[in-house]
Image (cartoon, rainbow, N blue to C red; front, side, top):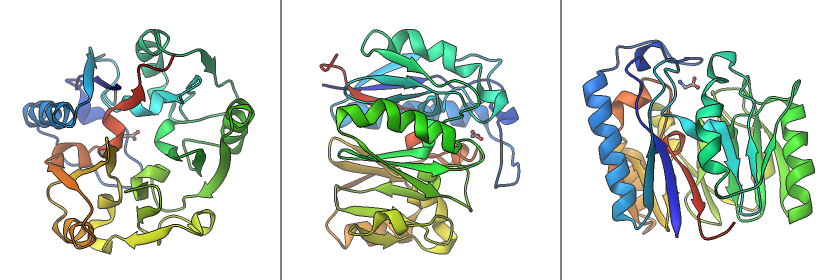
Length: 257
Ligand code: GLY
């Protein structure tokens, strides 16, 4: 069974880190409601949703994806490139440790799992302000013995790789190619998001269904005309925090441990 580990929204989410976008006020009550709806969507797709408590010293704590890369065989506890986010990791690891052997990224390496896009046994990892080459090398060393291929991807125009490139199935990526170098994705079909909907490139594939923000109408039409199964949820408050659907969960097969 797939488990989606989530973490409650911090009351200080308005102090979240921002890199590529301007600060706008986040309505915290609305964000909490949207977070519940997000969890409900995952439940409706058959996932077992677990919620960890918020840490109000960590404004970005609901974006727990960045704290651990959970593979089938092991989990990699990250060392976020954002120093402000490093304290988040400790609150997530005890739960991950129940399911996977843990290894820890160490300095000078940095890694945030929002930079890691897994498609089958391929791990595409963004080089960003949050993830450096040493972090990518660490993942390669630990994951290659289990049959994973690691590909470094330059991401000049976004916070994380998955901010601007995700997969809608095993053969097709959804991306804004003006913000990420797609050379490593030769062989994949590309669906290009409209420039004005660049944040729509972050979708979450859960049990074969693409989950996306309800406000990205043009991108929704592009997916539907290809008969891709899509569900939508409003995450407008989290877009203001420079986050997307993938940021708010760590999804893994809890039967494998
Ligand atoms: N607010 C998301 C991040 O900067 O990590």
